Image (cartoon, rainbow, N blue to C red; front, side):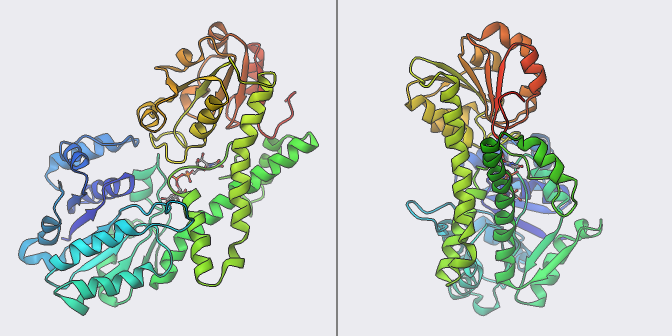
Length: 447
Ligand code: UGA
């Protein structure tokens, strides 16, 4: 039975650690953030992710999942058998300030701190999203800094989980990809993932660079698909056509498919925007910048959706936000998470505030994380409270709660019955029947 450590306990690492514990492994989670570790050790999730609350408390109670903020504990995990412990690195790689490139400082720091303590040949596995070539560079660093020298092994195992479905995606992923440099590492990773591969989940073995690129390419493709349909929304707006019908018609072609083809405010979050920029930056360094020049357009189309939403909202307010009360429904970058990193909803809310409106935000789970980043916005405890006295409602993150609201109840509390659906997710007929002027991106005003 393998012992596993997981370094970096954010949305990815914490779920990875608890999911592996649920497969029966003994898992030690490590993070430099002492507050986060204290919460996790007490079975309290430091973020919202559906199902994680139960999974974490169950696994902590079982005794299989423990936490530490000490690298020495990580290196010693497994005691005399520590050569059989595998170490997953799940720290984040944010966009460098003022640049497109990814900042790998956190992952470098993990290797710098951990390697000197790994005194027996051990396998370290990177899961973070990194520029191609990082794993090879880290292998040299690991070997140079560890007393076990060239016997140290490093592999890459990119993560494809989506926030909001993190547990499902960890325990039942579409595929597993492992980038390895030797058979021993492949065997160890096959062993770790045996409970998943036994259920038929495909495992692909690649070299290090390919495994790094699979992740970058996957996020580039997903971003491109979203920006494609949003570009069609722009054309639909110009032509008086309806992008929702267009998207539906396209989706019947199995070569295209309907997923990630929902037009609206576009993509945000801690991954897609920074990953396509880091991918472009790395391709540039490698001399392949032309190959990814189209991603600049993907990024630009995405950003134009935010500007278009603000313009459409201003139009709804007769040309000026001054003195207007705007309700913003949704703050998270997508539903079922409290993550507000690069959230399109908050980007729009903050811009409208700066243009003179009074903006009140409500998100079922992300009010607190939003308030930390944007303290100047008002926050309400319910969708109706946010809508009270509003001249316009902006629906910017498609939580189920918003779709299930009765527009007639909303009509009672607003100052003006106007709704702009930034996610094309509300039932336009219901809202119009309740007397609302319903507008959405990429659709004619009468639809
Ligand atoms: C994304 C990828 O989907 C995961 O496979 C990947 O592992 C992860 O990044 C990562 O790199 O760690 P995530 O950021 O959780 O996952 O969010 P997505 O579900 O991909 O949504 C991203 C954004 O696209 C959201 O803002 C969402 O609202 C938007 N979106 C999605 C659309 O605007 N239209 C769509 O049709 C789908």
